[in-house]
Length: 214
Image (tube, rainbow, N blue to C red):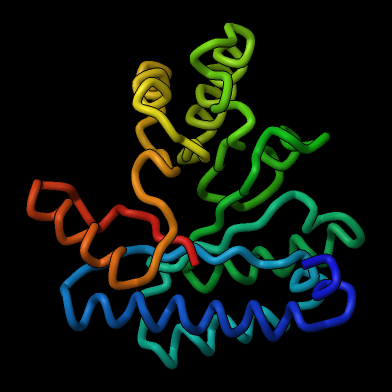
């Protein structure tokens, strides 16, 4: 990825992934009746100009996808370089109606500053906080504080890297009901994912709020 970002291919790669994610989300609606949000991680190079805004808008229109079913994930590294341009680009993306998530939250030096200034919808708590959640009192208290602060500011909080039932129980006790990780489903082919979703629906799981990351 560093090579791709430095030499240009990352733009083409991200555009392709974006298009494929939106195309699949639309097909899941048409063929299965699933309104499942898809999340796409974007490189920071897209936030040096507003080209990505036009690309996202064109893909949404071409695939006839409700923008609320697309979540753009970014890290605070996006704002290294020219924060003003990056913020303007992000604001333009928000005007399209998409959701924006701040990924790997908590490991950057200025994460709390971004909670105050960025137009994001979701805070994704970095997996480093989750790994020791059940054995470290300090990590548990820190996680509790971040969840409480983000929730009070109106953000949804998603815990990343959840791998055990004990971590699920601990996060529920900390009022964090949204989680992702191998405990629920490992990465795999689209066919396996659809089978997994179908099984969850049979057992009463609400598939309309299941994040699927491309």
